[in-house]
Length: 372
Image (cartoon, rainbow, N blue to C red; front, side, top):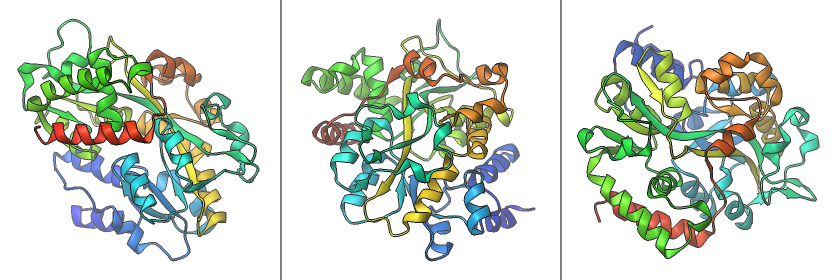
C-alpha cells in the first residue's frame, strides 16, 4: 500500500493516524499533521462527538463502540485543555471531552458539564477507585470526570546523540550544547509545570508572584535553545527519529512509539521527578447524543482500549483488568505499575488551579514563546 492509499485508509477510519505515522517513521518519511477535521466531517450525522487530544481519535480505542453502532464517533481535536474549554465557553457543543486533573475544578465551575451516571457504564466496576477519588470529583449525582488515562511528562532523548552528564535531569532541556536541537510541548499545561520543577518551585506555591518570576526566568533561559514548540506529538517524534532533535519534552507515548520502531531513545526519569497526571472524560450539559456519549465513555474504559493504551502508548489505564493482560516485567519496562498511586506519587502530581492562575500562566508563557 503506497502513501496515497494509506492516506485514504486513514480518512475512511480503516487505518489509524498513529499506525500511519509509525509506517512513515519506519520508512524515514516525514508528514504534515493530518487535518483534525477530516474524520469529523466524514462521520455520520447523529453520532456522538468526542473532543480530545490528537492521537485519541483512532479506531483502536473504539472497538466496542464500532461493534455496537457500525461507525466511529465524530472527533474534534484540541491542542490543550484551556483551548478546549475556551472554545466550549464560546458555544461549541460536544458530547464528551477529555480534560486532565489540573483543569478539573475550572471545568466543573464553568457550568458546562453534567455529572456522569456511572450506573450506565458497564465497565465502571473495574475502574480503579484511586483514580476516581480526585479532589472535587465526587457529587451526589455521580462523578464529574471518569478517569481514563494517566502517565508522565518527561524528556524523550536520543541515547546515541545526547550525552547525559551525570543523572537524567530536566537540565537536559536547558543544555547549551544542543541549542536548536531541543523541542517542547507548546501548552503551558505541560511546559510551565515542568519549568516549575526545573526552577525548584513547590506545586503548593505555584500561584505566588515569586513562583511566577522564578518559572518565567527559567523558561526565558530555555527559549533560545528550543527549535520547536508544538502540541502535535507527531512533529516531535519525527524530529527525534530523524536526529533533527536530540531531546524533547513529551508524554510516555512518544518514547514508546519510537522504541517500537527501533529508534534509540529513552524516556528520562529526572532526578527532580517527572510531571504526573490523570486525564478523563466529561459529558457536556447539552450533549445532543447522550446515549452515545455514554457509549463513547464505556468504549474508552474497556479492557480492549486499556490494552492498546498500555502496549502502544505506554500510558496507564483506569480499568484494572487491562493490566491483567501484561506480566509485571512488561509493565515495569514501560515504567508502569498495577498500582497507579506508586507512579503518580513518584513524580510531581498536577493539581487543580484557578482560572485566574491559568489565564495569567498562559498569557505569560505565550509572551515568552514569542521572545518577550
